[in-house]
Amino acid sequence: MTRARMSSAGSGPRIDPVPGPGQGPTPGRGASGNPANRFDRLAVTPEDDGWDPGEAPPPLRTETRVERPRSAITRNSSPDVPFDRSVNPYRGCEHGCIYCFARPSHAWLGLSPGLDFESRLIARPEAPRVLAEELSRRGYRPATLAIGTNTDPYQPIERSYRVMRGLLEVLRDFRHPVAVVTKGALIERDLDLLAELAELELVRVGISVTTLDRDLSRRLEPRAPAPERRLRTIERLAAAGVPVRVMVAPVIPALTDPELEAILARAAAAGAGAASWIMLRLPREVGPLFSDWLARHCSDRAARVLARLREMHGGEIYSPDWGCRMRGEGPYAEIVAQRFRLAVARLGLATAQPELSTALFRVPPRAGDQLSLF
Image 1 (spheres, rainbow, N blue to C red):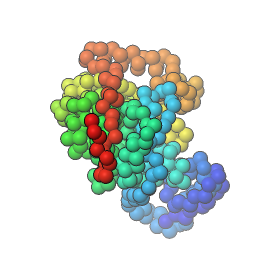
Image 2 (cartoon, helix red, strand yellow):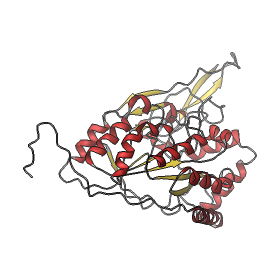
Image 3 (cartoon, rainbow, N blue to C red):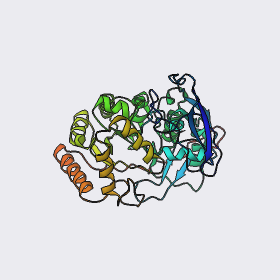
């Protein structure tokens, strides 16, 4: 048994007995503990009290709370992404990908970017209703809406909450374009809606494939579908007429980068029509979490991985500068970019999916509305 010792660390209160990085793995989870986030005033350090040193901690179960959103659409002006608006059905993600750049967003909720991010989730079941209200406003102008940019809309809890399906139903009714990013095979449940949107040139999908190695994938992304399952999802989306691209994301230097061409070839054979890639990025708390993961799972390559990252980010493992945070800079980054260009040219993959239509957008009639005379 251990006792928690509190110390000052940041600006917000937090007391949590879950150990921080380096305290040992948690089965079925990506992070090894709950490091204090940047807003915390209190940090928790486990201390051995001399009793039952071999006692195993209780299983970490996923908890889901419900949030009633005041708005559904989030706006951004980042020059690094091709959209200016997005919707997040959930906060946190049970897939538990250790490299996830969205982990620091949990700090805004007073939670840790570590185990909290993958086990203390927020569902937004009223998001479809709120989205419909926002799309109905007189001044709204349609543009492609991105879903899956912060956390995965097809993570396991979508099976019961069905927030993503509700959002797709609203977007279909409004004839609104949508771009979906996921690694969840649950997207196949919504093939009926996606095929309907695809006929109207209103949807495109990106499927993330990080590695083809099952064992490495299980350690990197402990609750995400296996690599071959994601390739089958690409095949089923393509067969249904849904434009689908493979996202080699993230490319992890000295760990997954040798697989770049193989991933692209397997995805092209499965029916992907386009491809993209993103270099590993480790903002804020993600850097220590990933470094700890490397030490536990890939200690023989940890130094090489971190050295490559520092080469691309001016001596740091991450740089937030526009234009390089998702690609890196320098010779290694240029080599990866060149390999990608040559591979997609050889395989006949496009580097961008077609633009989606905004011409069909309409506010559907509601019960009680006056009918049009024309």
